[in-house]
Image (cartoon, rainbow over all chains, first blue to last red; front, side):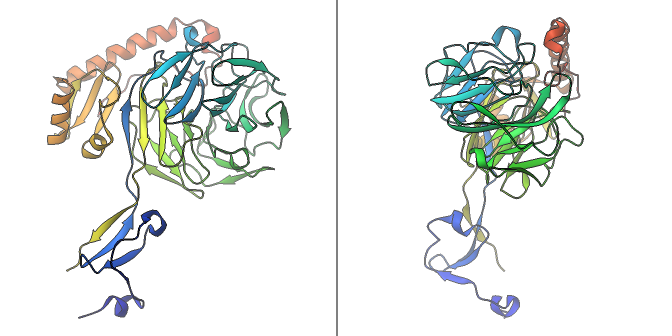
Amino acid sequence: MATYKGIQGYSVQKLSSDPGTLADVEGQLWYNSTSGAFKVAVPGAGAWASANVLNTARAGGAAFGIQTAAIFAAGNLPAARNVCESYNGTTWTTVNNVNDGVKSLGGSFGTQTAGIKAGGVTPPITNQTETWDGTCWSNSTNLQTAIGDSSSGTGVSTAGIIACGYIPGPGDSKVSQTWDGTSWAAANNALTARSSVARGGITKDTALIAGGNLVPRALTETYDGTSWSEKSDLNTGRANASGGGPSTGTLAFGGTPPTTNKTELWDGTSWAEVAVMSLSLYDRGGGSNSPATTNIAFGGDTPGTTATEEWEGAPVSAKTVTVS
Amino acid sequence: MAHTYCTATNTGKGFFTHQDRNDFYLAGHPGDVWVVGNNSAGVSWINRVAGTAKVKAEAQAIVDGKVEEDQAAWDALPDEDKAPARGYQRPVKYTLP
């Protein structure tokens, strides 16, 4: 009988039990001598599930946090531009309004207790910045360049970045601005001008932008603390996708045109399509600082919705290999 | 038939679970219309959420009616709310799968 070593030229590791941390051996094959079976560590598919809905339907607002602690402020609907809601993993609660109601944000980032919203369309497009301290919004130092409809924003309250967006006159922009906790500074421009991007990366120096209002709407760029560089494209080009997550696990979901429910996962090198949302929407809010395995999508267009969905990326599991 | 159709109100957490999404096709549409994979898990889900079964033509009519309603609402917006309209588009009709 042919052996695995004889065919492949190397042996299969023999273990008395499956490895304790399967994520560390993803893609590896071993023989479990206790169960007498060959096994391989494979990633799960992940899935979106319904969650309790927002109190006020809207899209295009300031969105940040994680699946169990998120903020969604302002937004596209005329009657909802001042509204702010906080999510605790179970319920959305209306909290103190923003001071300056806006739609189509220039950018937002942070956590449930310390966040930033910048720019947007009041109308007109504004350079206003507000900081969130977990209880109230306070006006802060204005953006250097007024910008709207970026949907970008990566970082925390003491170090963040927004990029691209729409500027009256020039139109789509590649302007990039960094926040140091007190004020904004001009940073090196992104490589390609566009608006309505998806964002990711969690920290300022690992920021990511993808897609946007340009054809083919699939370009991805990452920031290294100094400059932007182009990376692998989205599989499905789109504008107004939402997202968040670390530099090796950013999730991008939804977008338009056409309006889609597609979700893609960035592993630090390339995008892979994963399970779709239940709803096709664009301009949703997302958990900017979520880990790779959990995220949240809320609100969205068109029209404005209250729907919320929670993402669970299934952990790596051990699958038994069928052999004859 | 690959899909079945129903209307059901999204009640939030638990309305559909991660396991549901792995067990059958599910897509939501305007007017609380849901397109559901036509297998035993999908049928069980419709029963669980007290969904009202619809034939495809009925479901399509509900979606079309809601889109028309949303189009009218969008058309009634002041111009300043449509411009820049890059992130806020007039809803469009489409065909259910």
